[in-house]
Length: 436
Image (cartoon, helix red, strand yellow):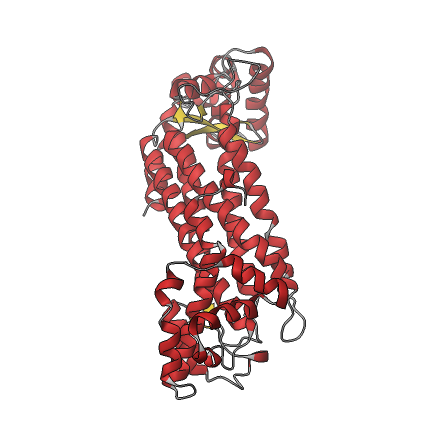
């Protein structure tokens, strides 16, 4: 992923030195388990552990490994050759009974787990920001829209509470998907354990904080990985949902909320007045990218027989790119929410801008309660509403001039139906449900 949309902590997970560090730990723990079983001498385990400090410090000569791979055309063999030079004669006992997928798939599980933990930290920050701002703005009235048209009043805090609930679901899905993909496979060729004891797999899994894959066919089943990338895609969709809302609210005609605009910031090279929603537009684009990687992850599930490597090239790209991009997007959106500028006066002006049409349902329901058929009640209210829509003025004034309405409800009752607080009587109930 390009540096512009990357955070160092996430990038470091996918650096070659970290990959080789994990490869080393897998080989070392496996050799230790083999030694404990008496398959290889304890001296072999001791020899490989002697270089632990060097390998865990990522003091690894990556170009040297790359140079070996250029000759042997096999990445794991290149690494084992490099490791053998460090370990010495006892290196002949390394990788006993294992196959390359044991190293590659288990490493990917470790990396996805590490990446997932950073993603959960990012979504936790976003959740905290949404929760804080939702409570801060819980009682700020704004217009709710359906089909982008004024519908009925809501509060800005309720908007944010809805987003919080959505991100929380995505957070939970991602957490479950991380658990699902965090499995270890050290089962040898075609996954039969013919040349390696299952106890080795159990030991390596425990040391790396993974669970044992119940049945690996030389590779870990790719439905686990598809589940992870789908969870990332859903989180990206949630990010886009919130971003699109902010972009709409920042439009000049709306101006109910906007991204923070710092001192010295410029919105346009040509128009000095511009304050553009560049961060949320960027997030919309990043979400599209993350979501697009869910399909190749799904297609990776169907491998030939016990294994092939058609998934490998895909995962080498999408695993770092998805996790790095989503990590960046989560923190960017959290920052947007934390600093989001809100204009309650503009919200109220927009809410009142349609002449009270947002209260039409209350009149409709009141008329039906007073004995008017729903069809007649709808017709009566709609006629007055359309007059207000086309000619301006206030719906209340037109209803008070409509004898059918006044006779059915009374003038005082009609006025009472335009009380804004009526719409907010259950806000606390919704908050209690969302933030329980």
